[in-house]
Image 1 (cartoon, rainbow, N blue to C red):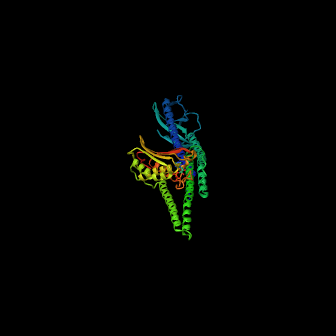
Image 2 (cartoon, rainbow, N blue to C red):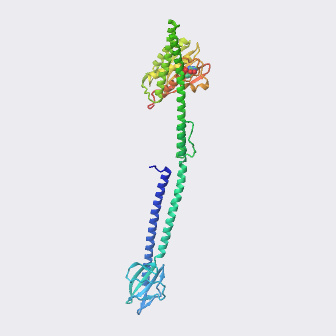
Image 3 (spheres, rainbow, N blue to C red):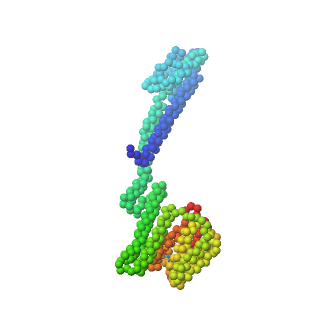
Length: 452
Ligand code: ADP
C-alpha cells in the first residue's frame, strides 16, 4: 500500500490530536458547567425554602405570610396545610406541580411542559404543622447548556478545519524545496550534468541548510569528477609518449637494416622509457593509495641529518653532470618520527628538482636545522625560478611549468612531496624569483598527527 505523503501524515496527526483535545476539553467543560449550575440551583432552592420556613408565622392557626418571599432567585414558594391544601400564595402564579409532598426531598418533576426541581420541607409553628414547597425551572440552565453544546459542535470542527487548512499550507510550503531537490537530483542522475544546483531560498531554516549542504556536496563531487577526468587524460597522455617511443624503437631494432650497435642503442632507449613508465606507475599507485586512505605509513624514529647527507651524496653525480655545485648545510643529530622511505623521497624530489631546474655553474643548497616546534628543511637553487602564476599549480599532479627541462619527470614529484609533508603534519611552501632561483621550505613537526 502506498504511504501517505509526509504533509498529509503531519496534518492528519495534529488535526486528529487537536480534535481529540478540543472534544475532550469541551465535553469536560459542559459536564462541569452542568453539574455546577445544577448544584447552584439546588443550593438556592434549599436556601429559599428554609428561609420561607423561618419566615412563616401562625397566629391562632392562621398563617401570617407577610415576611415570606414567594419568589426569589428563580424559586417559587408554596405553603400547604397538613392535608395538602394550598395556604399561600393566594394569587395563583400559574404553576401547578402534581407531586406528593415529601419531607426534605429534592426531586425532578415534569409539569407544565417543563422540568422542575422540587424541594419540600415539613415544619411546625405554634403547634400548627405545614408544608413549604419550593420549585425552580430546570429549563433555563439546560437551555444554556444546549446552546453551549451546539456552539461546541459547530465551533470545534470549524476551528479544526481552519487549523488543518493552515497547517497544510505551511507544511506544503515548507516541503516545496524537497520537491525541487528531488527534481534536480533526478536531472543530474539522468543527464549527468553535475553543474546543476538545487535552489537555495536563503531562509536559514532546516531545508535551506540541507539545500546548501547538498549544493556544497555537488560542488565537491563536480570538482572531484573533473579532477578524475583530467587525471585520466593526463595519465594516458604521459604514458602515450614512452609507449610510442618503445614501439618505434622495437620496430627499428627488428628491421633488417638495423645493425648490432643500432639494436643496442634501441634497447637502451627502450629501457629508459620503460623505467619512466614504471616510475610513473609506481608513483601513481602510491598517490592513489594515499588518496583513498589505504596507505599505512611506517612510523619510526628517523635520523633526518643522516638521511639528508645520504640523499646529497646520491645526487652528487646528477649535479656534476648538470654542472651544478651541490652543498649541504646540515645540523647534526636532527631526528623526528616519520616514514623513512617517504622522507627520503621528499628530500630526493626537492633536491633533484633544484638540480634539474638550475643553470650550468649554478648551485643547489640543502639545509636542515632544528627549530622550537620541529624541523626545518630548505632547498635553495639558483635556477630558472617559478613565475608567480605557476606557484599554485606546481603542486598539481602532472603539472609541468617548464616542459623543455623536465623531460624525465612526469610532473608528479611536487604533488608527491606535498602529500608526504601533509601526512607528517607539516607544511611546504616556495619562494621564488623568476630567473634567479627558488627556495622550497618544509616544516615538519617532531611527531606526526595522531589521526590521519
Ligand atoms: P617534474 O617531474 O616535472 O619535475 P614536479 O612535480 O617535481 O614535476 O614539478 C612540477 C613543475 O614545477 C616542474 O615541471 C617545474 O616546472 C616546476 N619546478 C619544480 N621545482 C622547481 C625548481 N626548483 N625551480 C624551478 N621550477 C621548478
